[in-house]
Length: 341
Image 1 (tube, rainbow, N blue to C red):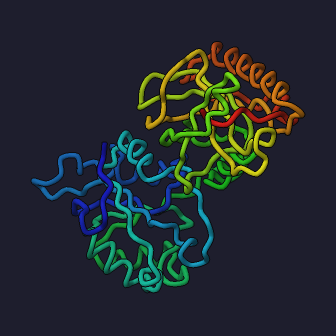
Image 2 (cartoon, rainbow, N blue to C red):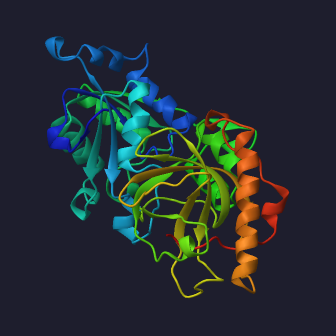
Image 3 (cartoon, rainbow, N blue to C red):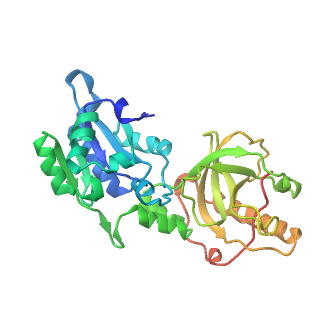
């Protein structure tokens, strides 16, 4: 896997794709291809050091500038560790995260180019999208970046925004699809299934008592999760083979209405001790929304129906087949699965 580096640790000189690239949709990949594609200068970076060739590099800010400047919470489609795996097949050799601080935010556009791109990264090529802004108060645009680049012998490539029949390709569209539970729409924009994961932690054991043990998944709080509800899903334990599962995301209104939201996964037809394991989840279809049941018996009956339906949906397709279009029943309401056991 490619390395994650701070600017001072970066392998230099660099060919830099500069941007957030959250989701790595086709528009992002077009910018990245300018420094890592077969016809781009960055391709020479695969041979790198002897001739001082440019190292294909993605450079992003962390945390997101809006978090520092405005206090906005910015949940991520891809955490940095996930992005490493996605960038490597694109020909990128390293991911560099520039710490976004008030001091960095105050740099003029010229100072940013001089100190960060030329000074720290020794960039010979920079590729950005046409909407890229930089410098204090977002005062620098792509025209200024090209002007400043010319002064410093830095080639700047500006890539146009990609559009489809619905408009501009953007991370915001992916976020809206996930917020609506429309996994198929999100996957079409991402051109890959949406996944998330974390460590399995100890739950209260009530699910096991009800006969439906679940893994209680602790996901990084900065990761964007889809609409709350019950999903058919594929799960991978410690990077292993995909296993059929049913997943509940959200509160447990029947068992404990005051408890915080949780992410619980029940593996279909499996009896595994999962506490402490790393579990990756790929939701396939939103089965239903949540509803408070009148009794534990009614809840258990619904869980059994969920498990059966998830098993049927997953048996008819492979993990590579991707997500299903929105199911008609998902527009209604339904219950929670049990707390983790």
